[in-house]
Amino acid sequence: MNMTGILIATLIVGAVGLFVGLFLGVAAIKFKVEVDEKEEAILEVLPSNNCGGCGYAGCSNLAAAIAKGEAPVNACPVGGEKVGKLIADIMGVEAGESVKQVAFVQCQGDCDKTKLDYDYTGIEDCRMLSFVPNGGPKACNYGCLGFGSCVKVCPFDAIHVVNGVAVVDKEQCKACGKCIAVCPKNLISLIPYDAKHVVACSSQDKGPDTMKACEVGCIGCQLCKKNCPADAITIENFNATIDQEKCIGCGVCKEKCPKKAIV
Image 1 (tube, rainbow, N blue to C red):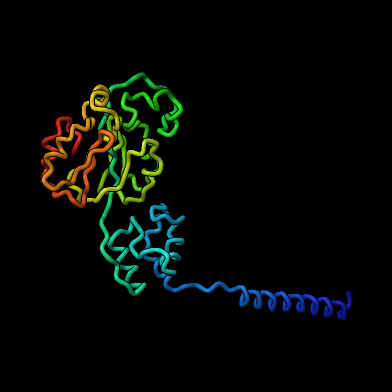
Image 2 (cartoon, rainbow, N blue to C red):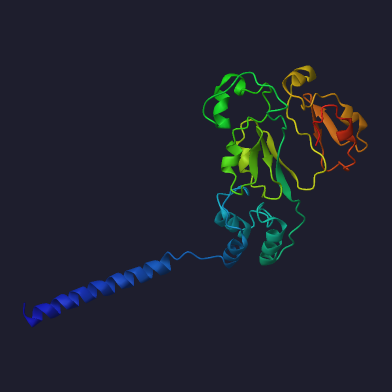
């Protein structure tokens, strides 16, 4: 190849490179995505667990929603009040009051306190037991199945099966809600961290039926309701519920409960 051919090839390559460079430069300017500085700052203070407890797919989605004013500054259940205040400072607003919450399993019918209808051998997944007779081997059809589907989804190692019943470690729990979503019996809910008394039973059977199945089941006797000085207890479907906003923590309900269903 003579020198002229080499020069021509070099010019062609250089021209193509220049064209591509100019094209990419123009494209970068035209399709540039504006970054919200507040969104980036919010994302930095979020815990990055991406647990979905806030209702969004992950921390980046929540950060975008807060920056746009579509979500409250204290929407992150994992970060809690501390992170809420940091985000409020970024957004230039008041954080507002937030109540720390933890998950609570509304059952204490462990292997010693509840009866079995039959021995179960099979897949140890609570969600699968909806396909077996009576929804599981325990005589109480409302109780914890004890196979730990909630344990498997908890990203904080805050829930464990103890003697056949899931138990939440309130110090480890971040109220992300994953255990609530996976429980097929709808036994798990969020309660205030400082709740004084709660009903640890979800049975809706009549008293005699509940007593046949479990030693510590709520029988709807209404003794707790009749003796509550704060009118904080209601009975529906043979099961007591304590209104945590009304509860004064006096402990009368726990003392009067004949089945020790209030803890």
